Length: 206
Image 1: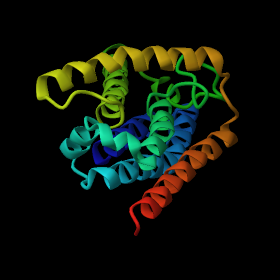
Image 2: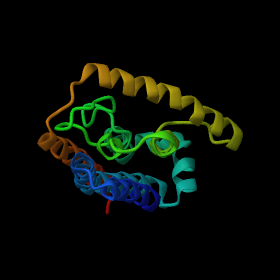
Image 3: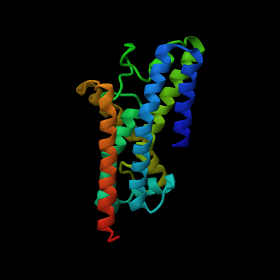
Image 4: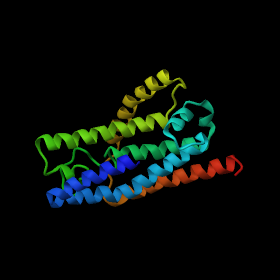
């Protein structure tokens, strides 16, 4: 989470460095969404850590390989919440449109307006790296895979094209929502994680 936050902060500072109005507007919107998005990611990892018994990523990955974790409502609650995290972090519809160049609606594209050449290529590469890191995180800690290191890694990587297709279908099916409604959608995901925590607590007899 710290690495993702640092990357977002760096991208925002690159927009402020150009002193362009639309770039700073896009960066401000991105940081505003980050308040809800990072809280949602934290809640998702928290609800995943309950049946796993640890917050270590290796432990979360190992927990997703166990069949009994799918009997826990907490793990099921993490599915829609992590899906919203993926849509937010990758800048996909209905939260954002990565192909838009309309200044009044762009978010992630705003900080890139004043860049060209190698600088633009590096920013686009960083966005692509963020895209795959978040999707790999979702595939590794939420979706099922074998317990063995090599079979588990192969199946986890095999989930990536499935998630990419799912994101493409979601983009084609959903129109970009108004800016003020996206935080409400993220808040609904946070509510789902809280319900997962409550379900796990009552189910575990706590």
